[in-house]
Structure formats: structure tokens, C-alpha cells
Length: 203
Length: 203
Image (tube, rainbow over all chains, first blue to last red):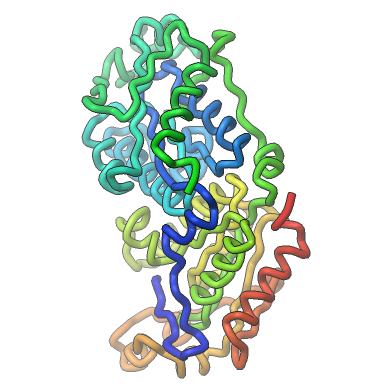
């Protein structure tokens, strides 16, 4: 479906480069990929980070189950294959947001190293910020706001990460975020400070 | 994969609303959906619009075959079903960019009214700007920079829009853009002026 640009001299159009775009926007695109157990605080922290960035005038956008499962990924179920495709599409969309100069924040359990590695390669080294939301399983299970762990323990939900399906923790995440005993604001500020230090919030 | 937000008081996080986001960014998100024959100038005009917007400090991003066919949609071929799914995903991704406050520009032939209508409904009335790039087929065929029309006429490419497959022109597009005899800059300026008039470039 990619069609040719006309070679008629008046109809020649060049792509704006990522560098030009970032200069104009005054920020650098990246993908901040939150991974961790259900209930670890991924969505909560990522939303707070998004808000802090927007308040600083930095364009940021969060992708999570809420805005993907019912749109782009509504054709996908919860089979192993569909979960993998779900994460593949999240990576592709996050890459597009990064390419647009935006700070893209993703909040999915994404339990498998190979899926996260694929996203890292797609986005490109130096633009992919893996945030391991390192909340102990016991704490997540104690929080259990929607009773999912309880259902998983009762066998009512199968293939539940941490209970009946594996979670492969990142080996060298850019940020290892401890949430237990800390506030959302503290955790979010740690991520924002890291992004600022690395030069993503200016160009 | 959507997981619960903790109800622990320290772990409650609210979504930023689209209105708050747009206030902070100083612009309103929309989808500018270019449709027209191959060679009509969709990509060329949309890229120029993107550049003009970025130069004004407006966050804008173009989606086209170049950045979708080899990423998100790389699993799709050119069957009728896959073309439909291609356009569905384009609509979903454009909707996410709109939701982020960005001016999303899409440049796909998108020959079927029903597919464009589905994108319009997803994005939402008032946020969907259909631009009919109204370049006569003869002009597109005369431009034919990559020789695709020649190949289509020779029967080497099947199901080619305008030659061996239908194009259903928009009945009431927001913008009907005549390109023949005009420069890229004139055409792009017309689109930018329309967006400014409608209040998308400020908030």
C-alpha cells in the first residue's frame, strides 16, 4: 500500500528526519517499558510519570490494556500465541510513538524475556528503557484489588503470572523500581529523574 | 492483560483526561485522513503538512505504508481481508495518536467508504478530518513515478485501484483537495489553514 512519491519536481516531498523532529519538539523520543506482576504498580506509576511529564511540557503517552485491548488488539484473546502478538503490537505502536518524538510509556505484565527483547530490538538500543517494577509477589497478592490472585489461587483463572504461569524478571533493566513501602510519587519521580539525566526531556 | 489498579490509598492513580492533556500541550488531537488514488499526492502533501505543523510547534505524526507495512502490519498481505485489517489497524493507531493530543496524519489509498467510515466512527466525529486528494486518475497515471500504472495496465499487478479495483470517492469529506496545477506548498497550506480555523492548533 506504500505508494510512490511523484518525481514531478513540484511533487517531491522529503521525510522530516527524527533529529529535525526532536529539535523542533525539544525532546527525545523513547519507550519506557514497565514490566512486573499484576498489582505491582506498573499502570499506577506509569500514569503518574505521564502526568509529571505533561506538566513539564513534555509530550508523553501511556499504552496499556485499557486503550489497546478494546481497540487495536480486540481481535486477540489470551492464548499463548495471542499474548505474544499482543506484546508484539504494543512494541510496534510504542516504536511509532517514540519515532514521533514522544515519551511512550507501556504498562503490561510482559512476563517473557524474549518478548521484551523483541520490543527492545524493534525500538532500538538507547531508546528502550526497561523498568522492572520489582514488587514482591506477596505484596502484589496482598494488594489484590480486584481479587484476581484469589481467583487464581482457587483455580478459577488459569495461566496467571506468578501463580500458574512464569514471570521472567529482567536481568539488566535500565531501572529497577522498588515500590514496597514507597509512595507513587516517589517511584514516579525516580523514573522522571532518570529520563532527565539521560537527556530525553530536552533536545 | 488489563490489570487492576491497586485500591491501596497510596497506590491509587487517576487517568489524565484528554481535556487536561490538551490544555497542557496547547493543541487538540485529531486524525487527518488522506485518501485518494496512488500517485494523487497523499503522502507528499501529508508530509509537508506534518513539517509545517512541527515548525509551528504543533506535535504531528504521519502514518503511511513506510512505517506501518514493515512493522505493525508486516504480518498482513494484500488479500481483501488483509487490506481491510491493514486499514483497521491504521485507524486504531491513529486514534491513539489523536488521544495523545497529536495531529495524526494518515496517507493510505483506503478506497472503500466502509473502511473509512469505520475509522471515522472509531476516532469520533469532530476529530476525524477526511481529506479527499482529488487528483484525476489520468493525472496520477501520467505522474506514475514508479511505473505502477504501467504494470497494472499490462496486467502485471492485479487489483490496482482505479485500473482493476474500485475507488469509492468520499461523499462529504471535510476537505476536498485539488492538486492538479497547484504546488505541494499551496495544498499543504490549505490543510493547515483548515486545521487552524477549526481550532486544532491551539487549546
